[in-house]
Amino acid sequence: MKSLLKIFNLTIVREYYRQNAVFIFAIMMFCFGFLRAIEHITFIKSALKHPSILAFIFLTWALHGVKVILFTLRMLETRQNEFLYHARLFNPLKRFIAFCVLQLSLIQLTFLYSLAMIKIGIDEKQWAEIGYIIIFNLLLTIAGAVLFEYRIQRPNASNTTRKPIQQLLARFQTPAYLFFVRYLFAKQPVLLLLTKLFGCLILMGVCNLYVTDDYDERLLSLGGLLVAAGHTVFCQQYFIFENKYLSITRNLPLSYQERLAQYALAYFILLLPEILVLTRNLPAEVSYLFMVCLVVFIASLIFLNHHVQYINNISHDAFMQRLFFTGVLLLILIMFKIPVILMASVNFLIAIFVFRKHYFLSDSNQ
Image 1 (cartoon, rainbow, N blue to C red):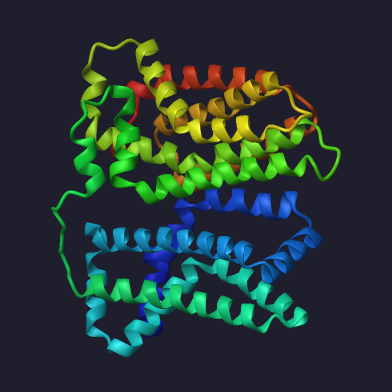
Image 2 (cartoon, rainbow, N blue to C red; image 1 turned 90 degrees about the horizontal axis):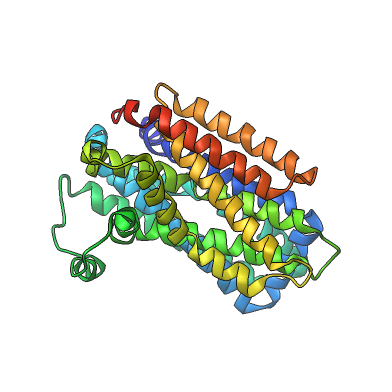
């Protein structure tokens, strides 16, 4: 079983954390950068005493569990991972245990948080809530293992039946700037839901922090930085989608301005949920003018992140390092009260420069 676990770790677990490094970094930065230990403890105690808060936590864990399960199923379906179906040669019990360990490895962020909740629950003598947390984690782990076992028993199985949302979208003619948005709704609905939920919760949480202390506009700027970081996966998926399905667009007689406008419209539409959350929850201390500047700042970061994808010969690790240090630099600039609209202008200028220089030279096979 050790060899099977090692194979799963190398092919699935490592790849999951590699692809979601920015998403995980944004969550860790929010949880341990904005919130102090005492605030985490207060939140957990409130969750243990109020079923509605505990149910919300369970929902968040379930969505994360669905995300990792769908990722694993996609990995099992890829051609380069077809050798994983040889796992059927292992003892069924050992294979099922390996799948449980695989699922635990993928949900370890929420699992470790549940251990902290159990520790505080023991101190507070909330035995029923501790039982619910343990049972929920067991169900989440077993559900993933069952689905992996089901898939491993059906190699090369494909479902050609259209999903309801695909049938609905097929009735409408889609303008070019909505191609990627439609693709997300049809092919990546869970990714779309989780990313939008993450961004909206970040902004909602940041806005609600204003009533607890004297904060300035920098707090919202930091929240916007996290929201933009959470959209990195969209930028990567857009690049993959474009090269896989829309490579012919490079041969169309479109100007640079028309191409850039299509990207800008697509990302603006994707940011509509966050804009609505900001509008509804904007603190009284913050002006609507700053809100507009913040939205432009978030859009500029996503715009820049998208266009640097066109630069060739950069390994994924090197790209993530540059992304990380760019985030740190922006964090420092925000703390020194550099206007977000100024940073947004610089981001847009760099993005346009990179696009004009690298778009037609970018390698679709990189």
